[in-house]
Length: 314
Image: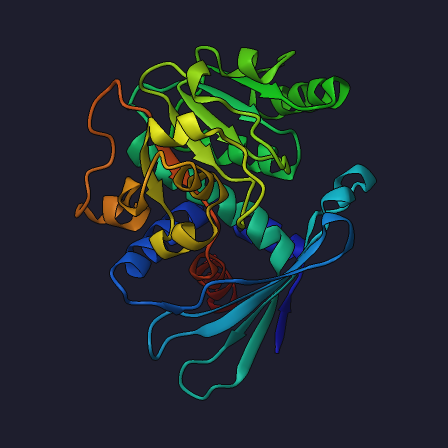
């Protein structure tokens, strides 16, 4: 078997490569051309988790699984919070082909998926972004979304102001974009056209009343039922689009809270980003509408990325 380590993933899986890969994977997913199960999550001690995500790129294509641990406290130690492997199998012989570094694939493809959603849901002239969170996904989201929108300014908020300021300064140097730390989440999203939540918050840190008409929101940090980054008002007042409708109905924490409160029903998840990309579902309906892309992350994104690395397309 081929082993693709973190450094190789990082050097070869660029956003120019990964964004189109994710776009096509999500179209195939929404067309029913892929095969997958809902992820299984085993809770561990201290808020840590182990997840198993199996899937197949078509009936005769590559198939496999992502085995991933999530240790949120790793960030303070300078270690990736997501650790694991993507295992690829050959669709013709069933033989195992490849082990790829899942932490790095996850970091890149998650941000690429948000960039794909932002490209079709944010207003064309959107140029100011707020990122709530300052970890690895904050960095990858800034890099990825700058590929689909010409950003003039980015505001960063996190629970530790010093870390937020250090992160903002580093990203400004890297990207050449004006990146500043905000004293509060509310200040960060003021005037933002695009908002990304990439935190490990267990309770909402983003509130619908803060957002201006026309804002696009990527909800990314919560990937299972339980912790929610946005409040019920934001969910209820938005055009709500999922990466996987089945996944969000079962595991999308923000949606499930709004549903439990009686503010929305299942029809509020109007469809999937793959349908918007495919032209079978309208995304944004007006310049004033608030749009939400709920990202749980999907194994077809991991398999498409790992497959491209294995086959030399990345």
